[in-house]
Length: 183
Image (cartoon, rainbow, N blue to C red; front, side, top):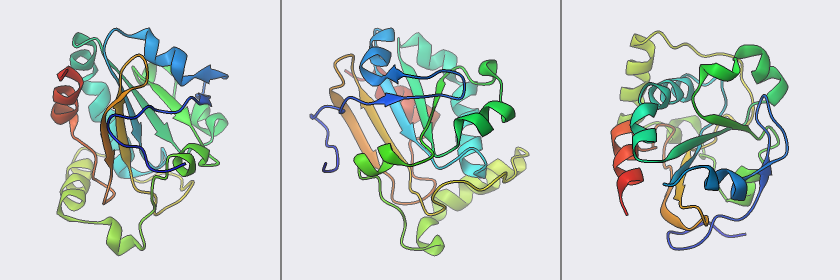
């Protein structure tokens, strides 16, 4: 498969969360009237990923107001993650992809080096995360994995596609809400 583009469709896939199995993206996108943001991060132990997830959770009421939902994809093992979090810890589903099948299928790239993963946005986000008390946890998955974000409607038609160029290169919460509200 080639990289996804705006105006194309998200391919069908099945997934599991730390608490549920055998879910499909085609059924999940129909749970809301608005759009679905599918956000690929690294893994739960990643400081930046935890920080992003915290912010998405903090502002989730705004996401719900526009009839939308967020799904976060991590390279974390669902059984390990189920020990670390409870179902009510996040108001959105966390898709577990420890074998990175979706990352590979959607051609979400990895950085060439740790140095190439970082830019000013990443460093700024890291400072904010540390000030907020976030620390690195257990390492999992591909350490050089870059993020990605896809926004789709109930038919999985993609209205927004972003393949991250650095570890911190995903839209922030305010940008995400604007994208979810856009027609």
